Every structure is written in structure tokens, then in C-alpha cells.
Length: 212
Image (cartoon, rainbow, N blue to C red; front, side, top):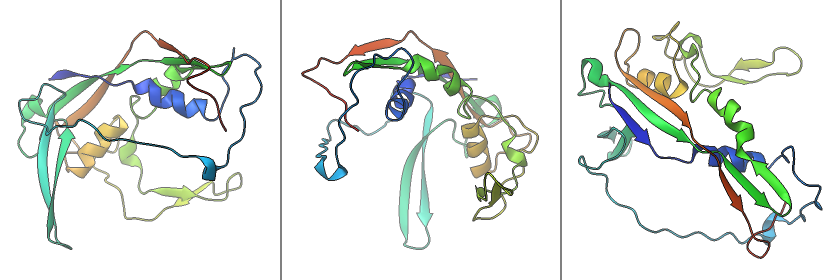
């Protein structure tokens, strides 16, 4: 059963998501961030680096595939994490990726946004916690919440029922269903979370500010 390290700052995404909507406990009572219209924002981006992934690249287990789109005749290539469902067998199909979770504490504009506050929710999320996704018959859509029905059947056909009763992580369930590796198949793509010490970033007043 291969075990590899996935070097990601997973908590950063959750920290930024929380920072955008809530002030965490313990933050100082500084003045509210100024309001800025979307039209005033001038976000800049740049592209740099990049390299083609090779079979010899030292990274998480991955494989390359290609699929022909019959509608436009274009063949699309892709790299995916995990074992190749078209070529693996037995225990070699069961891959566990180590996912490092690094909480980020950001002090900026007199406020503190603490990634430690969302670690428990991250570990309890479908990315890591297991659930019986195979018993869900179809996608759902908002109903009449808070009245009934809270949810109604959404667009699309019947979902894969081959893993009904199996407790799986969401990504594992998704990969197994899309490759038809369900039921008693040994195919798995599991994420093993490893919570590491938090990192604190103090943003100087002349290098960052808060806007809303």
C-alpha cells in the first residue's frame, strides 16, 4: 500500500475563506475595514515556472491518461493522483496520500485570523471523514428550506450505487465511481491528514491592509 507525502498548505485555503467572512475570537476591536467597490479593484496576476510531469518525478503517485471527445474529435490528456485504474492490480490499486495540514495565523490590520479555528472542521469534512456516498440515489438541489421539502432532486441521472454501504472519503468514492471500481474493488485513493504546527504571518502596516 503506497504512502506518499502531499506537500500542501491545506489550511491556507480554509483560513482565507474564513477570513473573508468572519472575525475570529480574540481579534482586537480595530476599526472596520473600508468598503471598496468591485469596479475599483485592480487585481494583478503573473504566470511563472511550470514543468511537464514525468514518470520519474518524485511526487505523489500519479498517472497519465487520454480521452477522445467524440463530439469535437479532440483527445484530452490529463494527469491524476492515485493508481492507474487501467493498469493496477491487487494492493497496488490502493493508494494513500499523506496530506499535511498547516494552520496559518494571519495578523493584519489589527485583526487576527486563526487557521487553528477551522482544523477540526477540516478533519470532519468529506475530504477526510468517511461516509456512505454510494447510497445517495441522485444529486439534490435546494427545495423550500426551511419548509419541506428542504431538498429536491437535482438535474442529472442516477448516481453510482455500486458502493452503497461502503464508508469512503468523498474523493475516494468519486474516483471509484467514475472508473467503475466499486463494490469489492481494491481500488482506493485515500487522504491521510497530518496536522503540523501552525505558522504565524504578521503583515506590516505598510505592506498589507483589509478591504471589504
